[in-house]
Length: 220
Image (cartoon, rainbow, N blue to C red; front, side, top):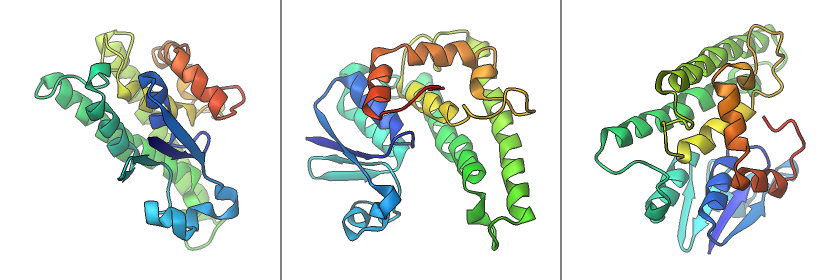
């Protein structure tokens, strides 16, 4: 049995979407992070970093969102969540997956948790870090928009839905409360990202995830 350890609206949403897309049996284990569950010995035994998500697949325990996504793709090749091995398309998919996790997601984490990078919470340094991170997120969202414009396909890799669509959607969702009138607008305000995110949101698997996680609108 597959078990996904998750918390609503976190990076765990990415494998959550993929599991719903696959239609395989799985269990959801909601982590009570408000009451210290991430630091509990039981959870640290699964992920010593104390972060979400964790996937258990039989005796296999995985953390790191990108690794979980690749595992689900590799163990369910019939779903074609990634292009074929050895192809240029696969190489491009690897590039974007690494960019999403190491660049966009990492910058968003700095934006949401700037206190992790300062000695004094609430300081001017914290505010500056947050502002710089937000500007960088804006440039990275523009990069996503430009890629969609470049190939003109319905999905992030072009004509075929892939695990990248779940990842792009989740990270873009994190910008939903950016002010549309600010210099850094939410992802949905961009000309190609906006319609694309709606296409992802219209998939039945995505709608089930929103229900499963008990999330209120706006969803993106």
